[in-house]
Image (cartoon, rainbow, N blue to C red; front, side):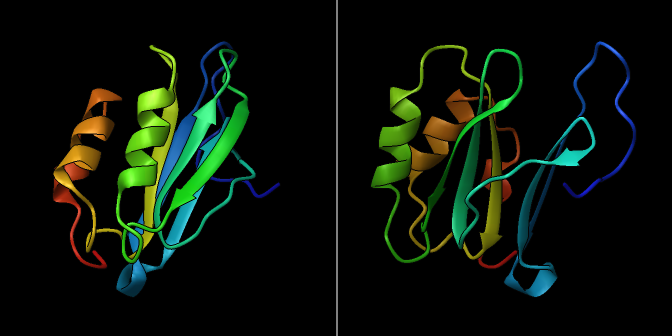
Length: 120
């Protein structure tokens, strides 16, 4: 596993999400307690679902550049209340990213999703 950032404090989970558009690094990475989590990462919006103990449960990638946002909305809507997720955009995620997708991610606690721009 690749390491990142700072060492986790005992008893507190350290979470880092690195996300960049095509011209700014073209990456989506998730780190848990300083170690890179294994996740499916492709162009668009990438989501890592966590178990109650903070371990990775499932990762999904939604090509909101070419394929729209319906799959992303359906996935988020099916999550149990209180499910923790990490979200990162890679390459280009804005072209077919809908208001419904934005609202779904905001319902999960996303604070910066309205800043999503073309390959930004």
